[in-house]
Image (cartoon, rainbow, N blue to C red; front, side, top):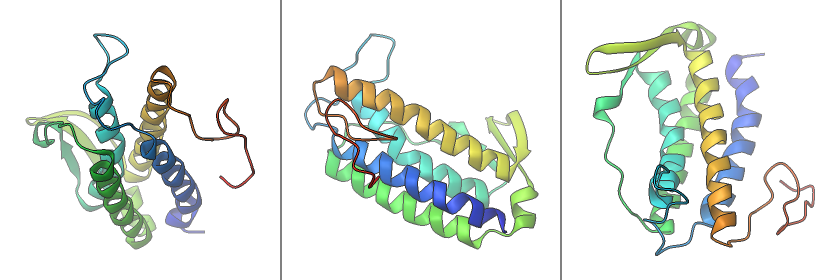
Length: 166
Protein backbone atom coordinates (compact mmCIF):
# COMPACT_ATOMS: atom_id res chain seq x y z
CA UNK A 1 0.00 0.00 0.00
CA UNK A 2 1.26 3.46 -0.90
CA UNK A 3 2.07 5.85 1.94
CA UNK A 4 -0.53 8.35 0.70
CA UNK A 5 -3.19 5.64 0.79
CA UNK A 6 -2.36 5.00 4.43
CA UNK A 7 -2.74 8.70 5.33
CA UNK A 8 -5.92 9.51 3.41
CA UNK A 9 -8.56 7.83 5.63
CA UNK A 10 -7.13 9.45 8.76
CA UNK A 11 -6.65 12.76 6.97
CA UNK A 12 -10.26 12.80 5.75
CA UNK A 13 -11.63 11.95 9.20
CA UNK A 14 -9.48 14.50 11.05
CA UNK A 15 -10.28 17.27 8.57
CA UNK A 16 -14.03 16.60 8.79
CA UNK A 17 -13.82 16.64 12.58
CA UNK A 18 -11.79 19.85 12.58
CA UNK A 19 -14.31 21.50 10.28
CA UNK A 20 -17.13 20.63 12.70
CA UNK A 21 -15.20 22.31 15.51
CA UNK A 22 -14.38 25.39 13.41
CA UNK A 23 -18.05 25.73 12.42
CA UNK A 24 -18.84 26.39 16.09
CA UNK A 25 -16.40 29.29 16.55
CA UNK A 26 -18.57 32.30 17.41
CA UNK A 27 -18.06 35.52 15.48
CA UNK A 28 -17.46 38.61 17.59
CA UNK A 29 -15.30 36.88 20.22
CA UNK A 30 -12.01 36.76 18.30
CA UNK A 31 -9.95 38.56 20.93
CA UNK A 32 -11.21 36.36 23.80
CA UNK A 33 -8.58 34.34 25.68
CA UNK A 34 -9.03 31.94 28.59
CA UNK A 35 -5.78 33.23 30.11
CA UNK A 36 -3.41 36.14 29.35
CA UNK A 37 -0.73 33.68 28.12
CA UNK A 38 -3.16 31.87 25.79
CA UNK A 39 -3.77 32.40 22.09
CA UNK A 40 -6.83 34.47 21.28
CA UNK A 41 -9.83 32.58 19.90
CA UNK A 42 -9.24 34.14 16.47
CA UNK A 43 -5.56 33.17 16.47
CA UNK A 44 -6.34 29.60 17.45
CA UNK A 45 -9.14 29.21 14.89
CA UNK A 46 -6.95 30.65 12.16
CA UNK A 47 -4.08 28.35 13.12
CA UNK A 48 -6.41 25.35 12.82
CA UNK A 49 -7.43 26.56 9.35
CA UNK A 50 -3.80 26.99 8.24
CA UNK A 51 -2.27 23.72 9.41
CA UNK A 52 -3.52 21.67 6.42
CA UNK A 53 -1.54 24.07 4.20
CA UNK A 54 1.60 22.98 6.05
CA UNK A 55 1.05 19.49 4.67
CA UNK A 56 0.87 20.90 1.14
CA UNK A 57 4.03 22.94 1.67
CA UNK A 58 5.87 20.03 3.24
CA UNK A 59 5.14 17.83 0.24
CA UNK A 60 6.07 20.51 -2.32
CA UNK A 61 9.04 22.24 -0.65
CA UNK A 62 12.04 20.99 1.28
CA UNK A 63 11.83 23.62 4.03
CA UNK A 64 9.38 25.76 5.96
CA UNK A 65 10.73 29.10 7.15
CA UNK A 66 8.63 30.39 10.02
CA UNK A 67 9.72 33.98 9.36
CA UNK A 68 7.61 33.81 6.18
CA UNK A 69 4.41 32.91 8.04
CA UNK A 70 1.55 35.37 7.56
CA UNK A 71 0.44 37.42 10.55
CA UNK A 72 -2.66 36.38 12.46
CA UNK A 73 -5.83 38.39 11.99
CA UNK A 74 -9.38 38.32 13.24
CA UNK A 75 -11.64 36.80 10.61
CA UNK A 76 -15.25 35.69 10.50
CA UNK A 77 -16.04 32.03 10.93
CA UNK A 78 -17.19 31.98 7.29
CA UNK A 79 -13.76 33.23 6.18
CA UNK A 80 -11.94 30.75 8.43
CA UNK A 81 -14.01 27.88 7.01
CA UNK A 82 -13.34 29.01 3.44
CA UNK A 83 -9.59 29.13 4.13
CA UNK A 84 -9.72 25.75 5.85
CA UNK A 85 -11.68 24.11 3.00
CA UNK A 86 -9.24 25.44 0.41
CA UNK A 87 -6.24 24.29 2.44
CA UNK A 88 -7.76 20.84 2.96
CA UNK A 89 -8.45 20.44 -0.79
CA UNK A 90 -4.87 21.43 -1.60
CA UNK A 91 -3.38 19.16 1.07
CA UNK A 92 -5.44 16.18 -0.05
CA UNK A 93 -4.36 16.75 -3.66
CA UNK A 94 -0.71 17.01 -2.56
CA UNK A 95 -1.02 13.80 -0.53
CA UNK A 96 -2.50 11.85 -3.44
CA UNK A 97 0.15 13.19 -5.85
CA UNK A 98 3.15 12.36 -3.63
CA UNK A 99 5.18 9.27 -4.39
CA UNK A 100 6.56 7.01 -1.69
CA UNK A 101 10.06 8.14 -2.66
CA UNK A 102 9.09 11.79 -2.14
CA UNK A 103 7.57 10.94 1.25
CA UNK A 104 11.01 9.60 2.24
CA UNK A 105 12.91 12.74 1.23
CA UNK A 106 14.04 15.20 3.90
CA UNK A 107 12.09 18.24 5.01
CA UNK A 108 13.30 20.91 7.46
CA UNK A 109 11.70 23.51 9.71
CA UNK A 110 13.55 26.70 10.51
CA UNK A 111 13.55 30.46 10.80
CA UNK A 112 15.79 32.98 9.05
CA UNK A 113 18.30 30.34 7.94
CA UNK A 114 18.48 28.49 11.27
CA UNK A 115 17.24 24.90 10.93
CA UNK A 116 15.39 23.66 14.01
CA UNK A 117 15.00 20.09 12.83
CA UNK A 118 14.89 17.88 9.75
CA UNK A 119 12.98 14.66 9.16
CA UNK A 120 11.51 12.57 6.34
CA UNK A 121 8.42 14.17 4.84
CA UNK A 122 6.31 11.20 5.95
CA UNK A 123 7.20 12.01 9.57
CA UNK A 124 6.56 15.73 9.02
CA UNK A 125 3.07 15.03 7.64
CA UNK A 126 2.35 12.91 10.72
CA UNK A 127 3.66 15.76 12.90
CA UNK A 128 1.35 18.26 11.17
CA UNK A 129 -1.72 16.06 11.63
CA UNK A 130 -0.83 15.60 15.30
CA UNK A 131 -0.26 19.35 15.64
CA UNK A 132 -3.72 20.01 14.19
CA UNK A 133 -5.31 17.53 16.59
CA UNK A 134 -3.56 19.25 19.52
CA UNK A 135 -4.77 22.73 18.57
CA UNK A 136 -8.25 21.44 17.73
CA UNK A 137 -8.37 20.06 21.26
CA UNK A 138 -7.48 23.48 22.62
CA UNK A 139 -10.21 25.00 20.48
CA UNK A 140 -12.78 22.55 21.87
CA UNK A 141 -11.87 23.73 25.40
CA UNK A 142 -12.30 27.35 24.30
CA UNK A 143 -15.76 26.48 22.98
CA UNK A 144 -16.69 24.85 26.29
CA UNK A 145 -15.49 27.89 28.24
CA UNK A 146 -17.56 30.15 25.96
CA UNK A 147 -20.59 27.89 26.53
CA UNK A 148 -20.69 26.92 22.86
CA UNK A 149 -21.88 23.34 22.28
CA UNK A 150 -18.90 21.08 21.57
CA UNK A 151 -19.39 18.70 18.64
CA UNK A 152 -18.64 15.00 18.72
CA UNK A 153 -14.94 14.51 18.02
CA UNK A 154 -13.98 10.88 18.73
CA UNK A 155 -17.17 10.09 20.55
CA UNK A 156 -19.97 11.82 22.40
CA UNK A 157 -19.65 15.14 24.16
CA UNK A 158 -21.90 16.59 26.85
CA UNK A 159 -23.58 18.53 24.03
CA UNK A 160 -23.71 16.03 21.19
CA UNK A 161 -24.28 12.32 21.53
CA UNK A 162 -22.27 10.09 19.31
CA UNK A 163 -24.35 8.69 16.51
CA UNK A 164 -21.58 6.66 14.93
CA UNK A 165 -21.54 9.04 11.94
CA UNK A 166 -18.36 10.93 12.67
